[in-house]
Length: 381
Ligand SMILES: *Cc1c(COP(=O)(O)O)cnc(C)c1O
Image (cartoon, rainbow, N blue to C red):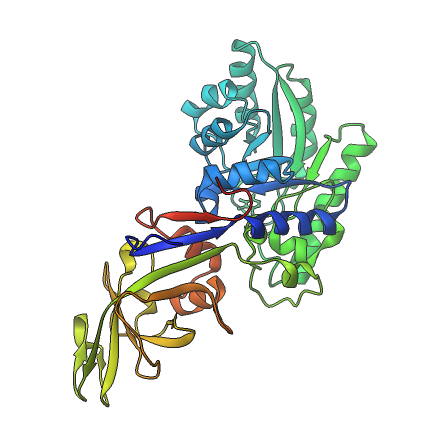
């Protein structure tokens, strides 16, 4: 039971996460390792409990965005390799070495700085080299990659463990993604021919897992899919994964007031909504201060007693309004589903993203720290 004191909360189904990881494992097969990406507080699900669950459920490696996230994972369990997906800042280099976090390298100066820091710490640091095949964010240009690989292999305090690239439009653009994949594969083959190929080769995020099973190489990097949300896009996927994963997160609030208003009544800031008929309106205990984007004003829907109810008027910081005219017996204190399933109805992170003018990744990571995360499932403590 959810204690009545919560006004806005997220429920995380740990069994769903465990099953999603098992499904991904099943689809990629036993020879492919899985790096579960847990950046941004495990996509808003809460890093420490999710890291613990993923450790128990057989993740091989963790992908993070910063060293604080890496420390939180280490606090939950020792021994799992962690790859920092972003570039390290100069002052972070000794900390990454100290904490045994694998850095992502894109250039020779970075490699030399890590070599020096690792040598100073009398350590051999595992590193991954990123190759830019079209993302334009991190990574060495393709043509410079073989020389940089050679150089890194000569730095005695570094062990080149991985080589990777990142797709920039894999959910939408099959042609460009194929080109990225081919270029990366050609590089891998060239390195292999010179016996310079690192042990771990990886490219696939969630979208690529669905659309390009031929580029799993020997490690995949799913984020969104682990949490049970399929990346949206123009490309149709034939992968059963898109269908078989289950969303782990539900997001809820409460009804704090129900009232009947006459025609002509304006609602909320800016009077953007005016009742055209007699309406029943519920005040809800969530707003953009919880991460429910103001862009959803007069667009999004919520579930109350299993019915879809339109959000009416501007969403405010802590409260919003819903039209409950068609829902019988709505009462103050009722639960409201912002994301999740109730009866035959479901509101997905994808649907909210469409109303908010964004992507499911942002919907999930935008849920603020005011919203407690409550854990269900066999492994919840
Ligand atoms: C975030 C991230 C991923 C995971 O992406 P999803 O689309 O959530 O699966 C994989 N690789 C890199 C480099 C990333 O930054």
